Image (cartoon, rainbow, N blue to C red; front, top):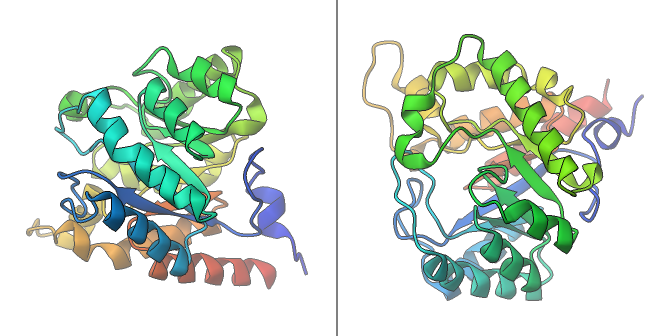
Length: 290
C-alpha cells in the first residue's frame, strides 16, 4: 500500500504547510460585484467571519481578493483594493489562518504580505504589473503563475486556440521561465491553468481532462473551477437551456475537485468548502487503497 502517495506526487511549496492530499483553498471575495456571491462579504467583519467559517468547514487556506476578475469586469483603483483587502488579511492571519492574497498589483501584494499573507495569487502571473515579480521575490513568499492572456474586460475575444492543452502548456512554461529568471525561487511556484480566463467551456473541459499533463510542467498545480461558466454550460444540458446561477453550481464544483485531486492537483480553489473538503478526502482515501 502506498500510504504517502499524495504528499510525494502533488509537490511541496516552500513556505507553506505540506498536506498529504489535495488542499482546499477557500475564497473570500471582498468585492461588491463578484460573479459568485454578489458582495455578501464586502464588509471587513463579515469577510473575516466568512474566512473563519470556511476553515471550520475544512479549508486549509483562504484566498482574499478585492477586485473582481469575472469576464467583462472593470478594474478598481489601488487605494480601494488596499482598503478592501489588507484589513481582512490582517484579521485572518491574526487567527492563525494560512492566507493567500488574490491581486494583480505589486503594492497590494506587498502590503498584504506585511499584514500576514503567505501566498500571492496573481491571475495575470505577474504580467499586469511589472513590479509584481520583484516584490514577490523580495518578500520570499510563494507565487501562483496563472495562464493569462489579458484583462477581464476583453479576455473573451482572446479565447482562440488550435490545441488548447499544447498552447496553454507552452505559454505557462514561458511564463514560469520568466518568473524564475526574475528572481522567484522554483520551490515557491504554483501553476494554475486559468480555467475561464480567455477560455470557453470546451477549452476548460479539455484542460480539466488533462491535468496530469499540466503537472508535467513540474510544479504544484492549483485548479480554480468553482462556479465558473463552463460548469453552468454543462449543467444547462445539451439542449442549450439556461445555465443555473453561480451559487447552484457547488455540486458540480465538488465533482471537478474530486477529478483534480485524483489527477494530482496540489490544491483546489472553491467558494463553498464543505462538499469539496469531503471530495478531496475521499480521493485521498482511494489513493491510499491503491
